[in-house]
Length: 633
Image: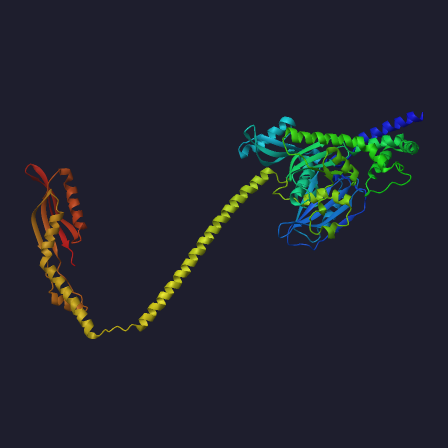
């Protein structure tokens, strides 16, 4: 009877554990679901370091019952500085969707910021609902990469573009069977969960800069924190409640991730079976099961968590109190073995099928506080070195003064928040700043840089031209000063006799020119007319009035006395002639002749005195008489 009751109780409790509704955060494949064993508030922060100088990164990890915050900044030499951390339990809040929870997050964040106003907030998202894949796609043009990746993912796990966000990062180019391909990491996430996180921070009036997941947060750590003995390829195993995750990193880059459907709940089941079979605890076990199976499940989990030295020890009246540490570990060893075998198969696939380098080290973390025998067991079974990932103690300035008193379990639990605090859009995948946004920003930066470069060239050119002008002005001023000095020294030997001789010489030249004009004017007029009259024009009469010309002496006298001749006799010539040719072209021939005369510098105004068509030897000719004014010199 008793044995039947014990079997029934065990079965009921197993069903209770397996069917218990667990919050999505506790199922998540990330360390953020760690349930804290110590509920007190923990906070260490130095607000006066770098405040107001550099922007501060805040990593926000909202776990199942605990809020973890880490604050970092970059120094002048681009190294990360650890400024503080904070761990606060919110187990007293019934729902994360309540206004009380939003006010709690706002209050704790504002307290943690201090006077730092230039903050970048990075929040963690559960990796359980994020589909992360590494893909090899054909080498296509840049604009078609997103379509190629989307098609490759949909071929295996279809999704709807309307309710799923897709982002990716090109890791490089590879060759597969001598065919060039692109190697990319791509991930899809539900838009409703991203929207929910954005809505939370929007309601508390805080600007969220980024949303990422724990595998990428760990990638940030491996890229930025110099961890001893870290080189080549390492793996990070996280054992959750119902779900575990193995991430593989090669030279600081996430190259593979895989989920395992097993976790600490299977260990609780194994420990429960062991406790139910123990005579010392069977009566207490049955009494507790009869009152409340949920309370019993909690008690057994408490017994499992007590393995860690950072957890509270069991009291004498607690279930499992009389079990030794060895007996507890032996009870969960089979469940742990199943997880290790899944990890081993993952490693074999990674090295044998994908042809990657052998994994050299594995870092282990669980929802429990740190229990090193589990870490050692995993490493021994896999035949490699194993350890916990505790990046806070590795070469982060100010660590000892700020977080030196934190327990190992607290430091390990802060790892996701630390990774988020080390985020940068240059190397951290961000669900709020996806590939398209990066391409737009890159295009904008290219245009901005081009404009900036152009402005620099213009400024350099203007500066050079300004320097050249200044130099030219200085040279001109120096030349002017030199000339002024020369003028002051120059004393020309000019007297009245010299000026009189120069005047007489000039008058002589003018007189000679005047005499030549009087002598050759008529000849010049005839020569000019001869060169201008076309072949179809015959002159029948020519008259020239050259007027009266002042003698050279009178001309020089009037010029010396500055007197102007009152009236000069006009000089002109009269031409009478006939134009032969086509009757329709006679008028145009006359007009062309007059234009040639008008273009001559010797002739001035031209007037037609007579113009008529007359018969001549059975043909028509144009009879004309024109008067031409001769220009005076």
